[in-house]
Length: 273
Image (tube, rainbow, N blue to C red; front, side, top):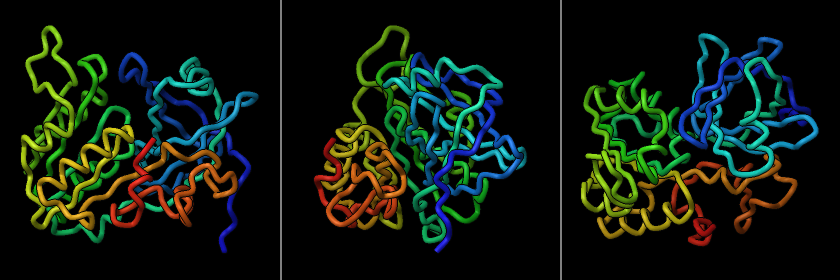
């Protein structure tokens, strides 16, 4: 069995991107110049000395520069401290951990990506992979939902995805907002409205648990089978190595058996916050 590295390694914050009023993306690079050998769907533990650590999906890999990105929503004490960090500061990094999206199994299929809020972060590497291996996959549909225009993430990426070959992007906000001329409505309603069929298609969903739960219900109303729907549950994890017991669902540990699951692999209560 490969050694599980438990000691955080120092990483340098190379650049900070203000994505929205409460989300920042941190471009990191290992201090020793090592590559983070992560694949889409995996996560890392990021720590601030004297404060603690938390789990974050890798939201992009920049392998040419040996850099990787985590996108952090300001919620608790640790994330607030990360948001106060400056470029050049050091953080600790453990990982990568967990399984990945089975992209090789999806070759030749149309892909339907559904992200709500910060839930788009772990899906961004999937979209990156599909667009960089465009001939391996069919049509790409993306739904991204945010509370308001000010909460929309990855704006440059959204423009590129909209313009990408054989791709359609649907962006929505929860409630009407002055100056917004796009879609308005919760993601489950948008899913029903666009009415994308499950034929030869894989769906991938990530967002708040309540959003995932109601989106899955909407898709089942459209005759989507659980075997064609994937999700990632990294929000429920803590230690990352199956020791704390916080993320167990039945006999499974999200951090060790996931965080990526096909819907028929997990009980319904796994989608309850």
